[in-house]
Length: 410
Image (tube, rainbow, N blue to C red; front, side):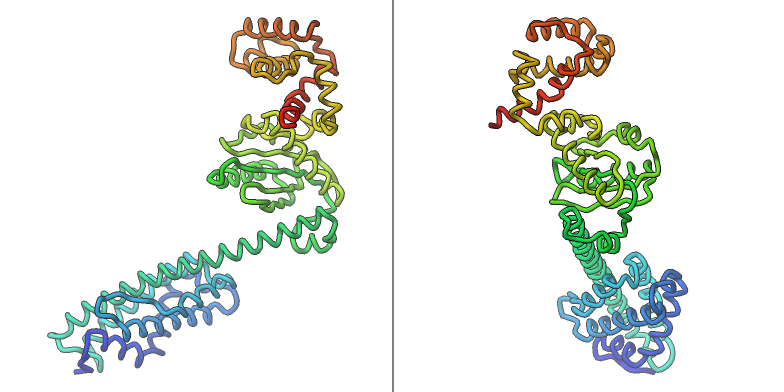
């Protein structure tokens, strides 16, 4: 007979220590056979797998030797440190690691059962069941806790690396826009070519809980646009700046046709080329956001395009002059009351629909007669007939939400 243990785990500690090298070889072989992805890890995969298994054999031995009376187990801190190193260097992916744990656990259990029955570690039948019960429970507890510790350490480290990378990219983009980072440095750090055409966008959410939706809709949009390059960086907690170099000349149509999930907002700049265009399209997108938020169009479930609001954006930069122009064109229709705001919305859509009461009613979800009555009220407040061909009238209608909000704020 073999060694008679003084405690149920004494046998395990003795077996693990004396058979370490043979066990390590067997565990590496079985893990790679059962989880082939281990063999394609970066930089000497067999060495990495062997090191990882050795770390856990050492930790398992320490846990068995220091087992507490209450049965609780604390995995040594070096497991956490080693897992973080794996995550930092992307040596092994987390799902692969966890699958390897399952195989190592199973292989260890099979080999220890065989050792209890035969050879120098054989136990008397009367003790075998008791030792096997405690050792099996210890193995199960170790691999359960080690898997949890590994998953937590790995995901925490990867998230930290992602935040650092994201922060660095944001700093590079901020410097590029400010002119303090060179084109060559930016291209190297960002992997984005500046000597191409760019379409900038700004995307944001009202609630942080909607960030996942925002990422999803941007992914869908960029897949439809099939860009040569796509660059985006977070700005603050709830918004991102982005640029794409599109292959599709119909990008405006594709963007306009995209429905945004509730709570998500997106504004797009115009197409510009080169390093100067990178900055110009970003400024366009910021202006589109400003106008979209001021007029409420940013919250209507579709992206705001600078080309669609360029007149309002340009004309509203001098708020005082724009306010005088709006009051002169719209008279009492520009008083900012709830009733006139509704009438202005009707007038804007009526002008967009080329003076068609039917199409206007369809967009407003009202009866055409309602549109006709509203137009009569609009003409009363204007003091003249509505002329769909009047450019001043159209500009004034687009500017009204911007200047009335600014007037109230002032």
